[in-house]
Length: 216
Image (cartoon, rainbow, N blue to C red; front, side, top):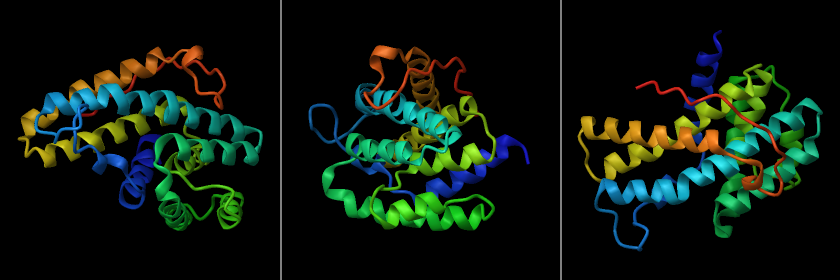
């Protein structure tokens, strides 16, 4: 199977099963009800894209590096840091429940992959099972290069946000596609600009050169 199809299969699973923060974008940067695409794009550029690139994208890179060493404790540490950096504290129980659901679906779709370390960590509540950990775990074992995996993750997440906005504001398809192009361009540029001094404390320095591919 081509790596692109492998990625597509897993992103379909991720979309249908993981908790998503996209519903939280209902207000602009001033706290007013979101009522236009400009306000939505401001939120994306100010908050969402920096989080996706500097935190989640780099986390996937670090999980790949840890998997190469079978350093599971490092992976679970990254997962816990991701949870505190990307989600409010009050959804801990929801995150763990969703992590177990993702584990079950992942095992069903990829029965030949060893998920035992994650399963045991979830059972012991050593990890939350954030979507990024399963994404990196599966793509690593599918032998998909990290340089392909991270851009697809960023593209998928950005597309999900744009689709949410399009539904919220009842946008026509042309407006949605133009906005998606702008948002993909922005998150791609931000990913390429990630520098060592912007890396979160639990991430190592790992340069990245490949642009995100737009498949509109």
